Amino acid sequence: MNPIAMMQAAGRIKIFQEQHPKALAFIRSVSEGDIREGSVIEVKVITPEGKESVSNIKVTKDDMETFKLFKNSSSGN
Image 1 (cartoon, one colour):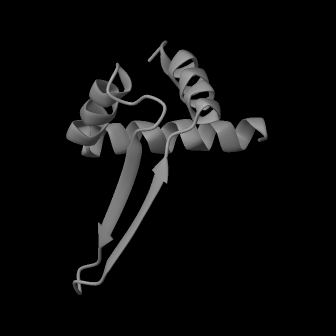
Image 2: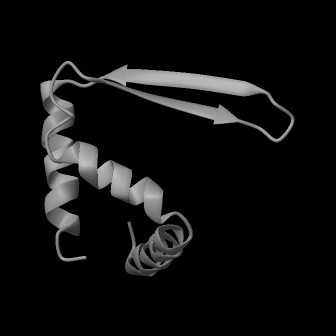
């Protein structure tokens, strides 16, 4: 990712944090022990018209390494 795109992404993440503090608090909470190998993460989207889309993943050992990298890279925030 180029530096300009990284700065834009950081700005968008900050806006998301300001607009949705409960979402990030939830993510922080579950990332401190609730998510482990074998856990299932599910995401559900409901459009304003009521259409629902659901997807999930079963967390693997590799996923845990990725989550650890994300957590370590954002620990300065």
